Image (cartoon, rainbow, N blue to C red):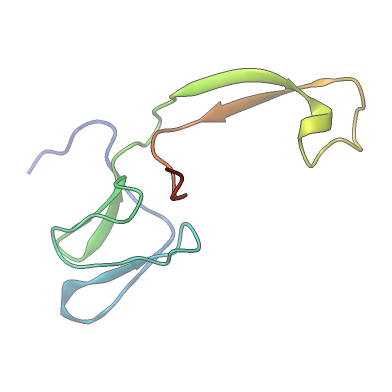
Length: 93
């Protein structure tokens, strides 16, 4: 089976019994059955292996003041490039 170009095997997961996997990407620690997806809808269990569906995809990019980041001590007054991808693991309305 040929996968879309943005699908790659995930790095942060563990294999469980019966083909299920536990995603270790965020605090939800989703246990995903074969063919299922995680809470964020970007992780899918394909035959007992976890794949990300958004590898290399960028949904937003911006230059932010370093003071917004946990790096503000490094170079005050400088800018940090911020990149984001699709989906979210929060439950905002």
